[in-house]
Length: 306
Image 1 (cartoon, rainbow, N blue to C red):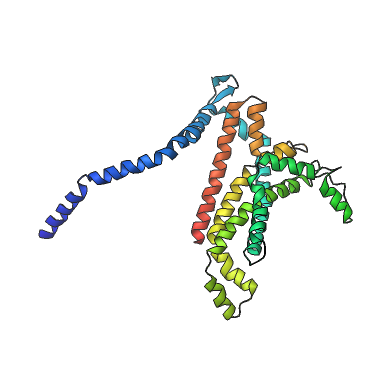
Image 2 (tube, helix red, strand yellow):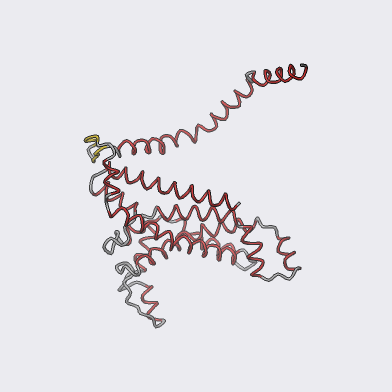
């Protein structure tokens, strides 16, 4: 009986309102307000507005009529939708692995004790500071089939120098990938450098004493030590590649033909060139759901591995 009474008294004490806890919660909300207010204005409200627009025929002059889910039906009956989704995923397959591998190689090189290490690191990171329009215009000139330096260099070393990089569907995706790799590899490198510096040097010293070579050290110490950074890199690069727009819009305009049109450009053309903002909003929501599903699958896979 005494034990039951004490337990009941304890529960009563726990259920009593704690004014200090209430004050702490209010303070936490106040600290979050500088983030929550812009987040609600510039993110939540546009998302809700876009969802509402997707249920209407909506042009540049505003709402015209309510059509329910008719815009969504148009998306799934449009063959271009599946083509452009494939283009977006194709870019992920060729660009994400290449930029991650290049970033890791650069990080491993710069992490060594070499001269001018800070200058080299800054040189590789500098392109990431530039906007996508600047990067695209730079490489648009470099890939010029007549006067571009890349074709001129190929001629000097004895290779075919008449490649139409941006108008030949066999080369255009590789040109866009090279542009994107050059632009973003510095950011990937910096993240890997941060991960490398967190790996204790004692592990490498112990491995050397045990007779492990450079490859075994990389495979059994470096890669496991970079596992968390690698997960972040893979997730970020997949989402970033799926959002490809600027390079395609400036360098190829979706061409040659329809070979480089992606989902983001598909949404842009539907909304701003065809004046069908309702349909464009529906396309945006469908593509957003696809990216969310990819994120969930990736998180589930990494959790199961852990």
